[in-house]
Length: 268
Image (cartoon, one colour):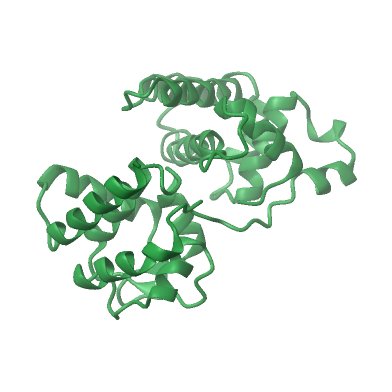
């Protein structure tokens, strides 16, 4: 994922990983971006409507996100760092809250500009226009950071077709393009629970990034049935929650067979 120079330099500090070989180098920053999007949405629901004051909302939001459902210490620390930045934003940088959170929607440029201004403790009037342009350039290519080898893409395509992921059969090339963010024609989902389970299994094995839901939404690679509209991150999340709640869904066995093979092969 291409990003602006400041955010790229910040990534190793945020994740605690300084190896260029890390497939999930932007995971921590993506988690921060996700928290900021959630905070904005809840601000619109509770502060903009007059239900809460900005201060009470800030305290409630932080308390509601204090813990993260993850046993991995590194991921817990990553969440703690992200939540601290959100805390600084909501409680100390009220100028930024007023400026950005009162907008009905936020784009990638807004999110990363907030991150830049919080980390550098600067205000727009202190930053030359040229520096803003160069530093907050957000025309980015979204990627899953897929590390699955090309020789195994036919296995993923077969699984997708056997489990009826999409309305039409998918080719090996289309699967490869989907996994590497180069798909030119979006696919239409027919089995969203299967798709969510498939990508979640790969992310657990660190074969794609943990923020796959956000990446797929921004790429627009998979569309809603009957609509020319990308599946949203919320749709993927809801489908995954149904999977975890029910445990059984259409063609789950086909996916489990593939994941067992992939897990054994890539664990060597």
